[in-house]
Image (cartoon, rainbow, N blue to C red; front, side, top):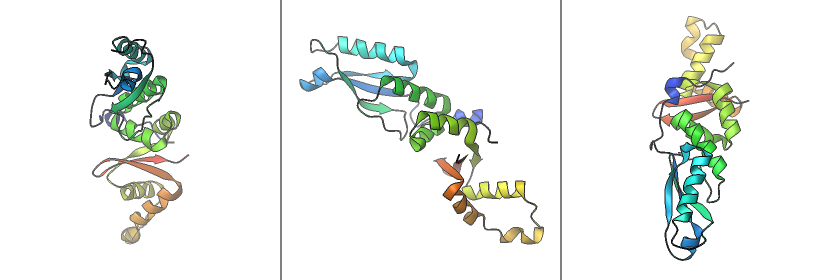
Amino acid sequence: MANPIPTEVLKMRTTNDEIRIYVACLASYNDGILHGAWIDATQGLEGVWREVSAMLLRSPVEYAEEWAIHDYEGFGELHLSEYEGLDRVSEYAAFIEDHGALGAALLSERGDLEDAQKASDEQYAGQFRSLADFAEEITEETSEIPENLRFYIDYEAMARDLVINDVFTIQTGFEDIHVFWQR
């Protein structure tokens, strides 16, 4: 049974501590005017909607009501579409705020918030310098290896085999590999 991601790993931040979106007024944009606002995506759906509404009210174009996300920061490699729902953006931001850089990478890898949450809670196997180190650790935990055979085990090959069906990895830095069981 895998353990949830340890707290010290969760405290790792993204390269930019701010998790935010730039929301543009489309009425202004269509009139050739750049009008929008950077909005903290971690404040929850109500707060984000409140700021989008306020930005639209300040628009230099009358009756502005349409908006689009034109930029974002702090989401790692996760791609947000121009018309991503603010509810999803808020959920992604909360997950990344709770799980740091690893959470952003996990969302990008899995592509789905529920899958990322499941991987975080149930599939996390640990943090290692390499996948070969992980293969060595699980081999030594589950097998009695005679001392005279210890140097003949190819952990690199075992690591390659593990990736085929058993695990997926996320690298968050040099010699900083997070291993998750495939389920």
